[in-house]
Length: 392
Image (cartoon, rainbow, N blue to C red; front, top):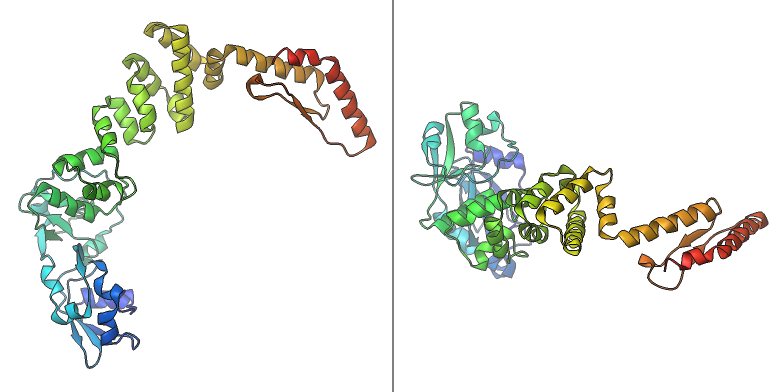
């Protein structure tokens, strides 16, 4: 349909595919035989001929410029191979010789197959009993011993006592090639958990090349094998949080350098887990720097950490511990504003971290009375300015 610019309605396609009826549609006049063969995109672009429908043979009638869809043989086809697509191929019907044969296998037999490749975390299954009985589902992938991929369809079929399912026999013989077929069936791009990635690489024989990494991580994230090695060597709790995307690898690396007792207490604290990635990293940085400065033992650091989390605002408590002088200065500055500028309409700002020479004030007025009030506030500020400059 895409190659010839022809639209086929879903209803008409299903009628042909599932009711085993052939139908025809015309090639547009603008696409004559010569232009089809010379069109570079139509002739040379690699097409993924995967679709939810029957395996059909295509033949052309050049005189009438019609394409016939004949001989439906099964409910579905997800062709994993990429094939060159052109009018010459269609006329010879040669490309369809590579299509895998569909087999109808009982659910009892499918359930008896080994399930070493059932590694993907379950997702919400949208297939219904009616869809299974009508054959409206992607075909399963099997070989002589293994159920390689089912997308959760087999579980649903067993629950609803569906007698059998259509499956495609894998033609691959190497672990890597089998896993490539499985990944193409799963078709999730780079949205795999680290638990899934670990099993994918283990079953595929630990391939190190970029072409396989592109299947797993996507073309923009090829340098992920170091992260996989880190994940495999991480503690169970760190690995679990990485898998759940509750922490990133930068924080995980710092956590693995921490004493196991401190690390476990920190990661078991739900308040810490609820922080954002940046908040977690900053919290850990402040805690680590405070412990280094005070040369605390593991036991004392753990007691201090427990005391921090016992506070109403653990982040503020940790900041006060890490920066006691800065915290004191900020408190004095807020006290000054409360005593001398409260409800005055004048805003006073200190330099960042009280490092610098200049304070700044800001105010607005709309009447002479407003202006007089602001001027009086500035005079009061001038009278007590020595308190401010002592903070710098």
